[in-house]
Length: 404
Ligand SMILES: *[C@@H]1O[C@H](CO)[C@@H](O)[C@H](O)[C@H]1NC(C)=O
Ligand SMILES: *[C@@H]1O[C@H](CO)[C@@H](O)[C@H](O)[C@H]1NC(C)=O
Ligand SMILES: *[C@@H]1O[C@H](CO)[C@@H](O)[C@H](O)[C@H]1NC(C)=O
Ligand SMILES: *[C@@H]1O[C@H](CO)[C@@H](O)[C@H](O)[C@H]1NC(C)=O
Ligand SMILES: *[C@@H]1O[C@H](CO)[C@@H](O)[C@H](O)[C@H]1NC(C)=O
Ligand SMILES: *[C@@H]1O[C@H](CO)[C@@H](O)[C@H](O)[C@H]1NC(C)=O
Image (tube, rainbow, N blue to C red; front, side, top):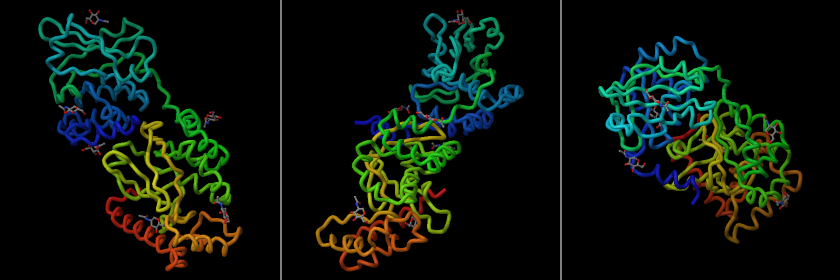
């Protein structure tokens, strides 16, 4: 079973098992600033995706002190990621540390952002019941002054997440160092390395399309890349498309909003794509569904399943799918019974080579699925059925449509 399926299985368990740090902290108005910055630095999502984690929260007064240093957002993210320990420390454990102290990795350290031996948090359980926290630094002289202490426990879900208040923000020279915004994900490079090399090759051969993907990645993007076997099987059909058709087909595999695995399940419904035209038609969409485990994408022609995750890091998620997504705007629903076979063949012959599918349904009404269905109303009963089913699916899905 792929890791993705495993994660989905875990996430399908009753909602009580998952946690949402934003929601938990939302019950504590005195932590609204800390909560806000966990969201804008995208740390909240990172926290929610983990288990066995401790959040050292700072109240609004403490955050005012930190914000007074006017860090850039990437630097603030590093400083705040010092406040997320990748181990579980409830109030009880904090007051019963073996040998009186423990060194815990923080998210700053665990994600490889911290240089040298910095990015750990030294927790000390002093005799008088005082528990102190300090960030380690390669420059050990600076740190002692920045010791913070345990105030109270805010929430404990053993051993998934513990949220405790500490008296003031932790910091270290390394965390405060000017940080560059994270380098944008190199999509083609990632796909090359993780099973979508052929699709990456198609993107690279169409610079305008690749630029649209790259530009979208900055503001939020979900890509569904067909695996190499799927692209290979599809090559004859791809070669048959016009240049515009090829571009549209590639763009059809991108959705201009970031969707984590959980969000895909929560947002079941119609997804617009990078190929969707701006007009009222909202063409080149597909429907995302899940059966609790498997997430599928239904185009009306193809039903593809997500098989693995290449990256899921706000603002970019890339999932591998087991089929090339064929939009209704470029392909006919496949006839599965013999009765409907003559209809598509006759249709193709009538159109001849010149009528190669166009990506733009507006300028080539012949290529629009509704017209095809009307053309072959009686002969292609199966095709009509598929189309109706798809329309019904859309209607049902529109209520929860993800059409942002
Ligand atoms: C977490 O909770 C906040 C506030 O209740 C909500 O806006 C957000 O969508 C939730 N996040 C997830 C991933 O459910
Ligand atoms: C952690 O801090 C305590 C005192 O606060 C100190 O004795 C101990 O050596 C420190 N541990 C590390 C690994 O820095
Ligand atoms: C912690 O997470 C696991 C698996 O996600 C779940 O089974 C368990 O009930 C959770 N514990 C609490 C206290 O939420
Ligand atoms: C992405 O990586 C490839 C090499 O795999 C490189 O040729 C390309 O220039 C990179 N693109 C960007 C935008 O850095
Ligand atoms: C390519 O297009 C021609 C004419 O439209 C058609 O006859 C042929 O079956 C197509 N080939 C594939 C592989 O789709
Ligand atoms: C999806 O695209 C079809 C055209 O293929 C369009 O008729 C329909 O309105 C679109 N659905 C949504 C919800 O935008």
